[in-house]
Each structure stands twice: as structure tokens, then as C-alpha cells.
Length: 176
Length: 431
Image (cartoon, rainbow over all chains, first blue to last red; front, side, top):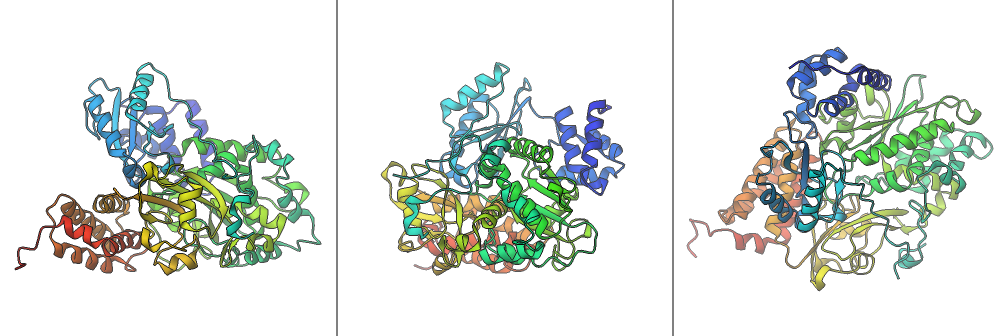
């Protein structure tokens, strides 16, 4: 399939290129532009990025395959990245992963048949104090998970809504 | 102030002020006055070197984990030759247990921006890049806005506040790779490549981004700078532990009642942080072990913690480090074999693959630990694991191999009976 950037994308790419003295530095940000546009960076999308930037396709492939957040194949509409790393493991991250797998009937690394959801087991997302947690499609974090909270999240996403930003305040200034 | 008086500590990195993330509120509360002073008060600040000297005297030990004096690091930059020079701000924050810099992005982004601008002036830097891990999309958006607001107000750009100093400021998103928190790997990533750490020397101060002089500082480290300029190096170095001074963001996670990020002086006793600051152990359980500063710092048993405080000198007494001050607390029910296997899985996943001892070593550590976890290990496997760690440490380009080896070495040494209990007796044993 032939992929093309929109005019708007191309303008953004020009702005990105202006941030760096060398065009190669635009590789990561332009892969992000591509993934936001097409939902993944399959080889054909990598070729588009390479051609747009005038870089070898091998370079773009090398970069895309090094970083875990780029989807090298098509994923579900919502990608649920469940953290099971140290603090999340200690606080029940694997229970949350298992609950989600049972609920959606797929294992980590798989996508539901209707293409709605993918589950991925991921490394530390930097939310250790709010464990267990997951990230929705490289965007919002959902913190302090319980099975009920996971169920609510799935309903929210099925209803076509995105989870809201889950702000966590700083703890009290003084500890009494 | 001494660390014993921590209950009366007033936060300075993330003060209790509503809306401080907005540039107007930040300015109303004295924001950007430190940067303005060093640019305009030529009597007090005779040029970039005077700023470097003040920051060096404060002894801000790098908050990203290495604990190196920030001002001293700045002084390694060679004299300007008129060409580009860079400051790369490390917001990759990926060490398990670490979740503090995101609080600065969210609640006081301009403090960090101001600190980065002062650092840039002090090192005659021409462009600043802040590298933020891709997963922090929400905070990347916040930082983009904050940087734009500072441009609009004239704090970034050409001839800042009428001075002859000009600098640009760019936000760069990572895309999921722990290794990019390693400083030279971060430079590779900024240049648009796979995050392979570079061989040192040359050090980044000589040849960094695009072959030009570059300094890399952690976000929190830079956020301390405006306060040092406003209140003086003596103020900073009088807070907390003598040899590791200043305010610090502690990230406390694991089995405590009130996990979270707490700003307090350095040098607070570990047990005070757990029992008072973080509200004690969850469900009234007993404390078993603590990882003091991110997953790579050696684990400490509860019985070793009496009198141990959160600073490098005290933690060294029990063979560990302050690291990122991201403390992971474990209760009596924690399975040390499972826990260590998970840490090893992390480092295996995140090894960039450049150096054989790390690429293969992290894999072997994980495989053998999985075997033990599944009840198929033998006692001799424990010594095999320790042997592998000695073949990894210090034999690679960057410190990831060491970071992977230390938890294995120390967790096995300090909880050996638990590991032995999970192992089958050797087929060669006669007793």
C-alpha cells in the first residue's frame, strides 16, 4: 500500500528539520509523525519516512526497530501497555495483566479479532509510586489499577472515549 | 537546615503554589529573576565563569544517578571557539523505581527551563535540547508549551533581555529505550540514530552532539540551579548531608502506605522515609528490604538499615548508592527470586546489544534466574550467576552491564538462603 503524508504533515516535518543542524536527527520525530498519521510504521511507512527525509531506508528501519514505542506492525485501535516491571510487579502488575488477558481473551502481544485492542507487557514507564499501571496507545497513563478500574477503562474505550489525564498531586507539604 | 529538622522543610523545587506551571505565576513568584540577574548585574556576575564557580561551590551532585558535582562538570567544557555548543538535558527517566523528573515537568517546568538557561549561559551554549522519554507524552506536550511561553516572553531566543546572549531551546521525544538515559546513547538518539552508547574518550565536553562540545545534565540537577543563584551556594550546601547536600526528590514506591515523590533534604534516614514520610508499611507488614535509588543500586536488608541515611557516604557503609533516590520498598512477603528475575528480565530487554558481555551476559542472567524461579535450578547455578556478573562488570562501553550485574550479585549474596531453598540439590551432592 502506498502511504503519503498530508500537506499539514509535510509542514510539520519542515519545522522539525529546522530544529537540528543535520536532517538525520529528524528521524525519530518524523517516525512519530508517521505513526500518528498511519497508526504504525510498517516497512512501507519506513520507506516513506526515508524518502521524505532523503535518508537510506536501512537507517530508518534500524531506528524504528530499536525503539519499542514504534509499532512495526499493525496494532489494535487501542494498545494497552501493562507495566510489570519492578514496582508494578511488587504491587500486582501481573495480576492486572492476567485480568486484562482474561477479559479480552488474548495474551500479551496479541490483538483482539475485531481489531479493537492489543495488549503488550512493557518495561518501567516511570509511574512507580502509582503502581500497578498501564498506558493507553502511547498516551495517557491509568494509575493505581484494580480489576474494576481495568473493566471501567475497557468500557470507556469501547464507548469511543479516551481516558482523561489522571493528575496525581504532590503529597502534603508537611507530614504531621 | 539539618535533615533531622525535615518536618519543617519548605519545598523549593516544587513549592506549594497553585498554577506554578504557568509562566505568569512563575514570574510573580520570582521566576526568571536569577537568569535576569546573571545577564544584567555585571557587578555581581562578571561573566559565565562566575556562574560556574558559584554552582561548583554549591556541590549539586548530579541527581540522575552518578552524583557528580554539576558545576565541576560544567567546567570541563573547553573555551568557546565561536562554533555551536550544546546542553542536553536528560529527562529520559527510565530506571525502574524512578519517577521524579516528571513532577518538575508537570508542576514547575519553568524552574527547570530557567536552570537550563543559566547553565547554558555559564557554558556559552548555543542550543539546548531536552530529551524526554517518549512514554511521557503528556509531559512532552506540557514542556513544549512551557518552552514556547518562555520564547514568547523573551527568555529564550536572540539577545535575551537586551544582553548579547542568544540561545535556542528544543524539546525532543524519545521512543522507548532505557539505554537512551545513558548520556552518550542519548546523544546518538538526539542525532537520530539507534541508541548505542559511545566509547569514551572523547568525552561529550570535547566531542558531543554533532562532534561539538556538549554537557549532559539531569532535569532535577538543572532545576536546582536558579535557587543556588538566588540564595547562594552556602544556602544549598547547608541543607541535608554534608557531602551530598541540597534538597532532593525522593521517589518512594513498593509496599508503603503513601507512595509518591517527596521533596526533602538529602540525608534523611531510610527508615524515617519509610515509616513517617511514606506512612509506614502497607497492611502492617514487616520491612524486608529496600532498593535505595533505582533498580541498579544494590539491595539492602532491613536489618542493615539502622542509622543509614539517604546520602552517598552513609549508603556506602552498606555497599549501596543513592542513585536516583527512587526507593523501592519490599515487605516480608516479597519473593526475592521472582523480584530478581524481573530485574534481570528488564536489563536483558534493555541491553542495546553492542557489547558481548552485556548482550549475552544479561541473557544468561535472566535464563538462569528463570530456571531457579521455576524450581529447576541447582545450587551451583548461584555461583555460576556470580561468576557471570564478574565477567560483565567493567567490561563494556557503558554502565548497563554493571547495572544488570549489581542487583544479581547483591541480592544473591544478601538473600542466599532464599535462592538455595528454591534450588534442587545438586545431582553430585552426597548429603
